[in-house]
Figure: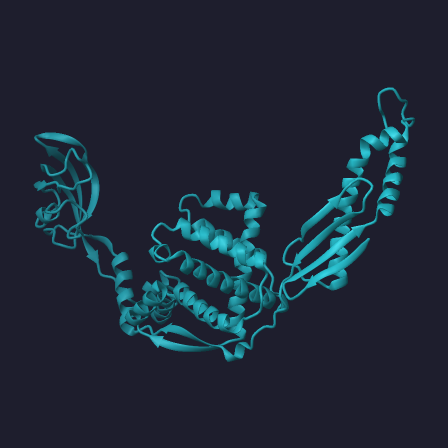
Length: 440
């Protein structure tokens, strides 16, 4: 096998491979001799088929098999001898495989660039930090209190707004009870506006044991067309009236939320408020990091990687129905846009892969489990089905690993490499800041 180098630069390596007819003939003769020992053909006994007959029938198949083997062998040898870091399997060009002639072909390798990691210490990234105020925590505590109301104090007094009444009721339209209009021992908080407008108001002043006729008009946009806009009467029996039990924000209350005391509950609330912004802050920081890496990463990239990324981007844009900005571009502007974005993504992706490799980062079972849970969250009610799909589909599961490694690489860079400068924001200002940044 003769290998002749044709081209070598930072992104490509081409080599011509020649397999002499002498070597091919020797291999064909060897394989025919082995085949002749067991060959079966009509008119001949086993092992007695003439070589001339076998040659005519099997040589084309044997020769093609030799060509495949030589391509594999040449590929491995070229990679080893030249220490190539290839992007993909090589393309095969100028393939010649004619009877009684040398086998010739050209292997075209696309090479991954030699990547020198940037000096991360020269990169400064802003990290927005929410300055959680006492007011923010107090407001959240008030919300928790509103969800923690209890009505265990029964009263014989007249019901007032904020009390809970337990009622039986039957609804009538045009003097006839309508379907779905019957309530049994239903608990209703007066003033909650959970019933038809005006219904709750007419129960204020009633007490346990009272019969109340409640007359209301169904809203014109009511979900049941048979009732929408029609006047109705509900015959209501008040079974009980309960007053709201006053909740105290004390250590006992905190223990309901697995906190030892009120101070710990307030700390937990502060963390929960901040965590609501974690994902948006991380997206912003990644954008900042990638913008600065784009300025630093100037290595050449394989053409096929670039084209593949451009096709992915075009496919993504085509699936977004309202991407008016891209659609309004001229063909030249759109091509430039895709070239720039694809180059950025490929360079950053290759750099992150190199960083992950050099720092020995790897994917754990816990990483995959977390990624599966995150995917399942996108399909409420079908979580188990989504998880089972990934567990049974190895290709789909493999596709999760790229984003996992990218995330681990980015998180490691933030934790160990770049300079992080925290900047405090109030809740209102942080929301506006992130909204403007992520919208752009």
